[in-house]
Length: 159
Image (cartoon, rainbow, N blue to C red; front, side):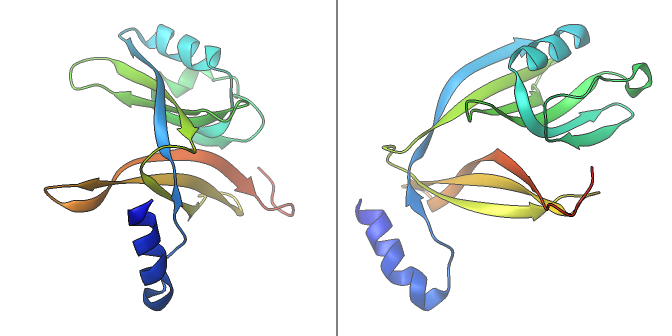
């Protein structure tokens, strides 16, 4: 891939992070309108680790979904990873309701990607994201998507 080769030559001197060839692959998109169906569909996707934000509670999880408490309210947004390595994203849609998307990773894809780690609030660990970059005519190479791929907790950390 020409763009990746050019980046690799420039990367060393500019002290930039490693990048690889690959692209996100949209597996499914589901639009949901009822709070009860949001939790049911998210649970049905069988996330193994990720983070959740409810009306009155937020938390990360690393070994399957927690059981929500009644006082948490409804699920507002979430990101997770399934046992098959798919990335789940739950967001509010432009209108009322939520959009649940499932992505996989295509190693043969024609884009670039890198990985970043962000400190995990409340634990000695990191949220690991894969950022996808696309070459556009109008703006050059831009990041167009970031997907959670893992939560790394240090062994001496407790949830």
